[in-house]
Amino acid sequence: MARKQPKPIHQLTVAQFERMFPDEDACCAYLVGRRWPDRVRCPRCGAENPHKLPNRPWSWQCYQCAPDTSYRFSHIAGTIFENTNKPLRDWYRVIHLMLTSKKGVSALQIKRYMGFGSYETAWSMCHKVRVALMEDIDKLGGIVEVDETFVGGLAKNRHWGKRGGGGGTGGIGSGKTPIVGAVSRKGNVVARVVANISSDTLTAFVREAVSYRSMARLQAARRRISAWRH
Image (cartoon, rainbow, N blue to C red; front, side, top):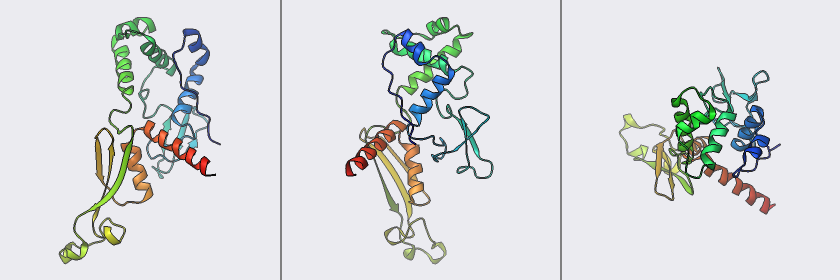
């Protein structure tokens, strides 16, 4: 069954924050619900329904991207919370302080309020939060268009020693190199040479090039269209 996505948090009072996130498990559950609203996916390959590890809470194991060794990941893998020794509840408190302070809050204020042992810890957390608020700065966001093309001459026009199958799928793409590209309405472009234009290859490219929020909006639109057709 599809997991019900938690509602977005608007500005909370301290009392509301304490009720919503009373412990670490509540923070983990909120993160999982917001990150994977339908079902848990492998952050490396996007495979659905990875194996839940019974002895490790909030951890899964994917056999699709690493069939021999498998790939283990947790709910914080690939996020700003990865490789940190601070609990999610501390991160949530810092984010709450940064978003509710009218004139902003400095790393020194965060250090004093949270009781951190070093200024560097507070500064690193604030920096990661600010970068995350820029909505996947290294990926395409908003309205993104994706298409593929073939580059190069036909195999029949090459020297006999250089003829081969190429990366096409026959017809117009036979013997040519397939290239897939994505462009956002803001003008940013990502292009890459791929082995083929299969559905799995193109899906992997989109997951890598397009921000998670844009993909979530696309999936929501597809669900609305599907429901309207039926």
